[in-house]
Structure formats: C-alpha cells, structure tokens
Length: 134
Image 1 (cartoon, rainbow, N blue to C red):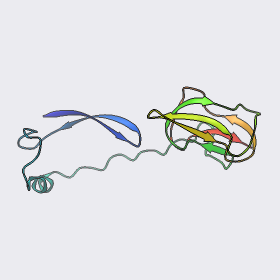
Image 2 (cartoon, helix red, strand yellow):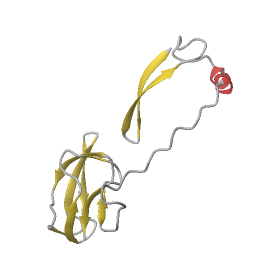
Image 3 (cartoon, rainbow, N blue to C red):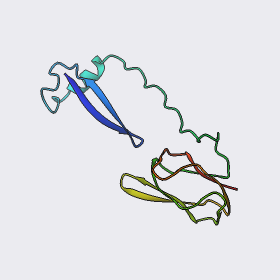
Image 4 (cartoon, helix red, strand yellow):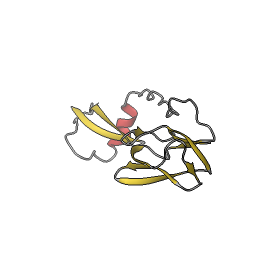
C-alpha cells in the first residue's frame, strides 16, 4: 500500500510517498504488542539520506563579521534600512515572518549599511546574509 505523507524538516516541507510492505499493509492503526521489534529486525537496511548542503551565504560569498545573518528561515516582510544608512547596535534592520510569527532582526554593531542582500517578499534560509554593516 502506498501512502502519501508530508513531513517537515528544519522548517522545510517535503512530500514523500512511502510503501507499506508489512503483512497487513496498514490494516490496523496500531501494531500488535511485540510486532514492532520483529518488524525492525526483519526490515532491510535503509541507506542514509543524501547530505544536505549548508545554507548559502548569498551571491557575495562566505559571510564576514560585517554581515548580519538570518536567525531562521522565513519570508522577508520589511526591510527597514538601505545602503548608506547609519545604524546603531540594536536598531531594526529586517523583519522576517516564519509560521505566522514575526522576528525583528537588529543590527549587531554600530556602522553604516553597505549592502542590503534581500528585499520584501524574498524567502530566506537560516544563516543567509541579510545586510552588511561596515
């Protein structure tokens, strides 16, 4: 019996199709006591999933100490600064929405914004460069 499932890993949804190869193929909701251990021993070994690449640091290359990185994946709702703006540590620079929650991303140091790497509506990943403050 094939089952279509949606799983979420690190905030990313994946649609998967799983084949149930057990004897009753899902005929009962809960397995009989003791059958899970037997099924685990009888199951064929499963290969490890392919490694997942680390989030990219954007088109500019690896992140530097001047870069403010996304603390989580989500969608950019607001960009509060532009290149050339002076900021102080703690000033709001970006607002990200993830799972209906807004996260305000603040400047990590005093300085001048030299680059804004995202725009409103962009999807961002955790660790992605948002702004550069020199």
